[in-house]
Amino acid sequence: MKNLLQTVAPSVLALCLLLPHAAQAADPEPAAKANVVILATGGTIAGAGASAAQSATYQASKVPVEQLIAGVPELANLANVRGEQVFQIASESLTSEHLLQLGKRVAELADSADVDGIVITHGTDTLEETAYFLNLVEHTDKPIVVVGSMRPGTAMSADGMLNLYDAVAVAGNKEARGKGVLVTMNDEIHSGRDVSKMVNIKTEAFKSPWGPLGMVVEGKSYWFRQPVKRHTQNSEFDIRQISSLPRVDIAYSYNNVDDSSYKAFTQAGAKAIIHAGTGNGSVPAAVVPALQGLRKDGLLIVRSSRVNQGGFVLRNAEQPDDKYDWVVAHDLNPQKARILTAVALTKTQDSKELQRIFWEY
Ligand code: DGL
Image (cartoon, rainbow, N blue to C red):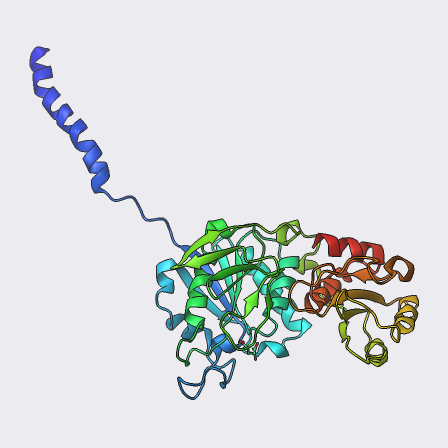
């Protein structure tokens, strides 16, 4: 027995001594990279100018998604990336049908087990509308990140490459799950609900009245707040149940305005009109009778504010909304109020229900 121990003990001891080193020697498996799909739709991020000095004069929607990805080889360090060219359109020309087609493709990808996050490259002109639409109708907690650029990739100090790098970093980051649709622009992470294009000539173009959710620096996300309004999985709206979006128009208010535009939109088939009012969403005396009549004819009237940073429209503030049965857009700007109203109209025509929806989304 003693001989057996003398023979076996040293090798067992040596094995015990070696094991921890053996564990250290075999580096831990690197975390598997996320699978991120980039859906390209056009815009300046896919734009090209004739020279590097042309940061403002260029043609949008020229560069295909494969070239966008090839232009940022560092994406491969962040995630397994593949691209799809959904459209190649300047975003001012996108229609409700484009939104529905894009939304349905996003839903299909989000349902796929081998997709961890989705990036959508997009023109900046209506980026905020697409981002809010998807925020309302995509039933997934996977990150969906919309991204654009203010300068074409051919320009000096082009911002698209880093914006795209940031978008892929966020889309592949588990911490971004459950935060609703996000927008990465100029190192910031914004909620698709809140963000809006405030400037049309600077790279710092996108702002949220209540601030960004976080920052991306060298591919790492830093989070400071969470959205509190309903979105994605907590939404009562679902892209898979929406086949069309009712017509909703925006009538801009200004000095000396009359009711012509409201009547024209009604003639064109609008089911609701967003009044882009001055200040508190105010309605000029010359327009009130027309809106009362349109409401009686069954049109929904939503008062929003044309002020471009944090409009805040409350019921019965300067207008008798209860008496006229009008809806207020709360802090949503006219173009976001239009998206929410169109989506809401796929479920209800009731003004009280629409007002609830504006408070909750
Ligand atoms: N035509 C505009 C658009 O596609 C260009 C603006 C941009 O993408 O920055 O939204």
